[in-house]
Image (cartoon, rainbow, N blue to C red; front, side, top):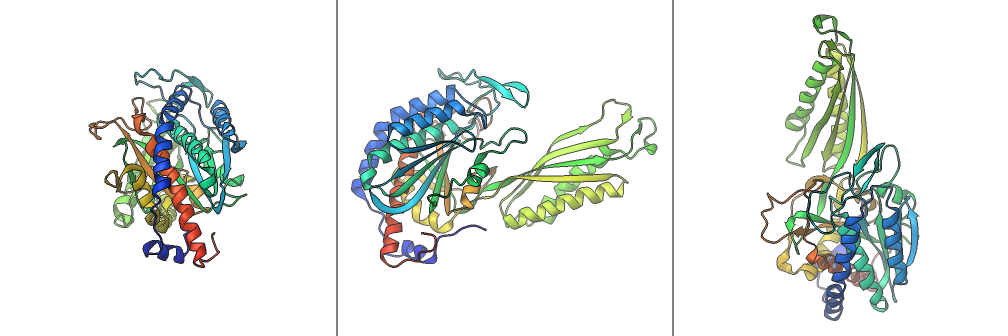
Length: 446
């Protein structure tokens, strides 16, 4: 169940009682964000050159914690193994706002020729692999470090408390380990003090630098990983009639799964993706094997559709296998939920994003079938997650290197837009929260 803001809050936002105009504060945020930008770039490049894989971000944790402590922020380390949580209490009463940045790199070898190129190698699932910040988490960390510096300097004007969440293992913990946002939530990061609203951002290598894009409601897909183990009967390749061929059954299951998307789900309501990424079977060309294994991912943007697709995947695999005399065992592991932007929160905070980037540089966008474990924080408090542009101006988005690739690249010259966005969100949400209380708003959720 998604938490939503009270109706009175929505009415106040849509009505004339609330004004987000805060010229002195906005000007102060603008000046301080510009001043901290050189540091943000330096931090980002240091982290980029020294990436660490999920649940192994020990040096990154120490780097972040040292900075927060230098600002007088209360710090807790080793949250969800290698995460950091900072707590900044403002000089005025108000809500608890959480800001989140993810910290982990990926097992990708960098090809970009920059002075701060990563040459780091580490162990991943028993293998030595290159490590790279191929998704921009280094910029997220640097932006939140810069935000902490600006907000700490404006502490006396701050309404309420800011919780800085530096999260490990967003890309998923290795093997069977726990980690990421689910473990942070499990360890109580959204409590003590209880968070009233949570904000996050993601850099985009295919969105122009200095711009912001957002969408109310479902924004990023849930991510489920599935395995289908097919048990047949082994035989010599020259006598297939003596077998129950799991490879043939597997190909029929792959085709059958696609009819869930093309013929069974109402994709006008929300898109669905089912991808089989691995097909393992056999050891020799003249032996029909006994077993085959399919592995893949499911992406949905509606919680009810997600459950329905799970049921259909199981039924499709099992019935196709049964028709050939084989057995199909299906396992589905939910990695992330739908990243859902609270509609009321999104509507009321859009002006804050416009302050940060300029109204002409902020726009709504469509949903994406990419996934984010930020979704787990959104299960505990109203949430807003948005994209920050990092593509060099003048670049064709179709030709810009994508995320999770060796050529991933961002222009870090305008990361201060992310700092300004976070700071304006904090101050504006605090103002709206206190205004609502002053006119007798419902206490529930505040």
